[in-house]
Amino acid sequence: MNRSHFQRLATILVIVAGWIALVATSPPSSTIESEEFTGTVIVSPERPEVRVPFDLEFTQDEHDPGGSGMTIDVVHSWTDIAASRLPVTIQNPSGSVEVDSRYFVCRDCESSGELVIEWPWWETEGSVVVTWVASAALSYDTDTPPADASVAFEMDVPPIEIEESRIHPVEALDEPIQREELSLEGEPDPADHFRIAWPGWHVDPKEVPNSVLVRWGDQSATLVPGLAVEIPVTDLCIPDCEAELTYFLDREPSSFLGPWELIAPLTAAFVGGGTVEMSVNNIPVPSAKSAAIEREVTIPPDPGQEELVLTIVTDPIHDEIAPVARVSYVATAADSVAWVEYDRLTTRVGEHSAAYVDGEEPKDQDSTSVPLLCDQLECGAVVPIVFENELTEAASLLLDLDIEVFHADIVGHQVHASLTDPE
Amino acid sequence: MRRSLILHPVALTALVVLVVNDHILKDRYPGLATGKFSDFAGLALLPVLVVSTIELASRRRLSRRVLWLISSAAALGFVFAETTAFGSLLFEHGLGVAQFPVRLLLSGADSVAPIRHVADVADLIALPAAFIACLISRDAAVGSRESDHHHLTV
Image (cartoon, rainbow over all chains, first blue to last red; front, side, top):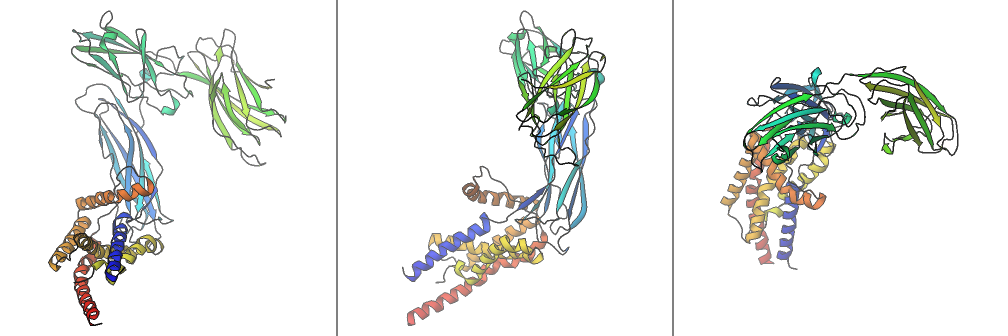
């Protein structure tokens, strides 16, 4: 290899290295993110504009005010903004709030803004649930952000006002939670269809079912928030174009922390010719009543035992609607509760590994809900409590039974909690 | 004929400064100096890289007039990116696109991600560095002639 070849090879290598250094690897970056903040608001013709103020607070005082030489950009992001098909306007859903950030040295600096959600003025009825997840971030053009940097994000979401007439505490699964009557005037084309969408619930979706069942005639479809279901007009127009849609919970809620609301009216639209008249008939249900009973149960040491059964019995209740017991417990045991099962449905209530040490506060706590089956005499439930390991020392469970009953008075308030060996 | 600009000691120094500053010094000694080193080094290196790449591909040396044009274009682009929001946005997405192949190979990225950049007028202090290529091209040409002469007389 002569000198010119060597020089050419060196040129190629340095050019490649230069482009990689200049383009491909520069600039490195790192980010500090705030906690995520979830918000939910409802807009409707009665509440056409919702303003949600937010504040950013950031701190960094490690470096000389003369300039850190780092690029720092405060960005707030909005993800998972969900709404119905109505074109709700959301101002400032994403973007950045720039602070005087090039040479950012700031202790408790603040920046504020406002998320504005607007109802489309041309829509005269209905409502839309808008949910979002927001966070803020400080970005640096270095691999490692300063140790003292922090960012906090706060939102002041206005509370959701629920009209009393639209509250639907949970009932049995076979009880409709809402009815709607549809009637269609004119001659529909067989290809026409109804489009029905369900915006969702007004409260934390973790606490309520994530779908409802809509039935018409002998047919049904499952509605989930944000997705529309199309019903062929021929299904509804037999024998005439008047139909009643009924909505049901399609599974047992995991907890009974109501009340919550099915957004009414559901947005129903007829795609095709003709006119749709729609009326909503909510089913009024009184508020729930509850009784809380606290009971401490001591479990004797019994090597080899891995399962205990908790029996909850209430006094007779003069109503056909099943009450619900919400069971929460604190386990003060070396080997604590793994899960609670009920009626072949396993409700996993969390991983439990509370290492109990004398004098310490119990660390292990969780809860689950079980329906109390009722016959004419009593309502009872059997809850097997399964331990992850064999019990080698005395343990205790602090049971907090919160019994909710709808449509009835609670008679007696008495609960029998007993532990029996399944064998 | 002069040798490739990219092998000039000034260009090699700019390359080393860029890498060391971006990946080591900024982290360990954050401050005004390390904040500007990369601007100087990057701006000095960019025209040199463009010229050297064109020359390598075309197998002929570019004239000094073209060198000035490329350096001026780099300087104008830098001013555009550091003084206007649109220029900054263009820079973020342009570099994001350029980085995509590397991210695809190294981390299996499946989409283009813009880099983060904040326009800062104070960075324009590094602007003269864009014309270093013009200065070292004369030096490279002289060095090359001396080298050729020496080669002939040996």
